[in-house]
Amino acid sequence: MKTSRKFMVGGASIVILGAGFAAAPEAAVLVLAGQPTADASSAPEDTSAAPSATPPATPTPAPTSDGSEASTTAGTFVGPIVTNLRGDYQLQIIVADGKVADVEFLTAGTDASQSVSVNAMALPILRERILEAQDWDVEYVSGSSFTSPAMIESAQGAFDDAGL
Amino acid sequence: MTTLDVKHDRAAQNMRRSWWADGLEAAMWLSIVTGIALMIASGALNTVTVVDWWNTLGRALGITAAVMMMTQVLLASRAPWVERAIGHDRAIARHTRLGKIAILLLFAHLILMTATTGAYENRSFLSQTLTWPQYGWFMLFAQIAAVSFLVVLLTSLTAVRLRWPYERWHAVHLLVYVGVAFAVPHQFLEGSTFVGGALSWWFWAALWTLSIGSFVIFRLLRPLVLNARHGLTVERSERLPDGSTSVIMTGRDIAALRAQAGQFFLWRFLNSDLKWQSHPYSLSTVPGKRLRITVKPSGDGSVGIGAVAPGTKVIVEGPLGIFTHAARTKSALLLVSAGIGITPVRSLLEAVEPGDDCTVVVRVRSRSEAPLLDEVEALAAERGVSVHVIEGGRGQSWGTLERPADLAEFLPDPASTDVYVCGPPGWATVVVAEALAAGVAPEAVHCEKFGW
Image (cartoon, rainbow over all chains, first blue to last red; front, side):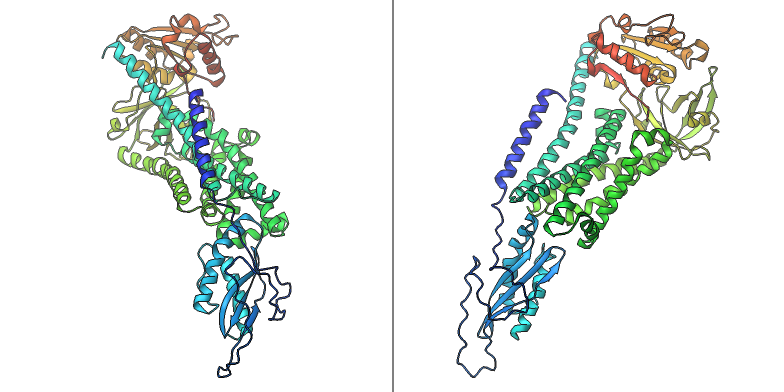
């Protein structure tokens, strides 16, 4: 290749790479609620998890004295740790007045940048779906074929514990 | 057309070809850079740990290797816009050189991705390797691809290549198509390539479509269509006094093949001995209603061709090569040949226009062993072209023992002469070097090599 053309290719390469840098997003931030609970069967009253950057968790209300309802479940219910090829997954649900008030993720995948970015994308959507459906049996988030099934399985455990 | 017009025309054509050739190379580099830029745009440089850096490097190597593999497929595709720009022999030479680098990069990618993914997920290298298939069918496919590439790399090493017959080597080489076909899905289905969004999906889909599409169209479909349309068969073969054989073929609408003097085809004669072999032979006449090749017995194939019966069906790939008048860049022409290399020179000479400034140099061991020399002399006499026959045993120069030759003596005006060289590789290298030393422009030296 002629030298002048090599320079043209070099210049074009710098421009293209520069555009790539410019378009690069901020580092994906995946904020989990506190440390993973080592024992999945720990007491459901464990509310010591640190507040997270996800919308503030509703403080666990005191059980209401409304006796007319048969079950007014309240508290935090931790799902089991589910492990697959991409790591460990665990969530907890915060229940008030027999309704799921919030979903918090305790463990998700690994430190691999791919794992972090997939989870940062998928977990907020999964949270919305569970809250909206008030059920663990929600649709998988596209592009998270390891995260979705594992988190949903953990959610199923938590819902079972809560008797929902 | 005046001489000046011809000169302008040739300069413009040469310029266009050089743009094409450099453009293809530039396209490869820019595709690699764009692939990496898309990876960066998807956030690959948001690295924290050392393992992240290695992981990103592994991805970049995978992207580079993928673009090089596409280039490989393209260089072997016989697409006219590759063949005409850089010529068949150089396309294949580049294919050979790039291929080994591409496969080595693929393995660097595989090793880095396995090691870093294993590190993230607390698995050893071996256990990660064994776990890959559980990530999805496409990862199992990628592993099958890796094994295919390894086999191809090992059999393409010079040591094996020299020992194996071409046909056996080529049969194993076909595994690269398994490799490419099995490696592509994991690029689309596994990995972070498309976290960045639709742009990178379209980018990779377009590149793979272009390269695999060219291959399917020009390497697979076009020969089928051409052979069905032209239905080439052997009309007759003629034994020449020096021991070589001319084979004359006919078929329907040969003109539509648009073959030019100096070009070659890959020929496959469909009789029981030769149907598994395909050989490159230059046309030894200007292609008209018939195509003629002239073959000197050397390998097992060229010996067999002497016995091809009239009526034998022939399958061809081509026309190939840019050893043609169309590739000329200057006004004068010097044709230099040795041995059976005289065949394209013979057809180029036949296509010389009256008044064209042309000189022919033929190197022969002895007149009685020289194929087509009588035809060359007759054609030259008709066209007023001078022929210099250098006859005798091998000496120090590319000439003979008795007459050490110096190319400069046939080059009164090297700066405005195109030199076409065809002969045994070692001999041709010497002639090419002398032409360049005498002051012939690099783009005006034409030499196609047929050693595999």
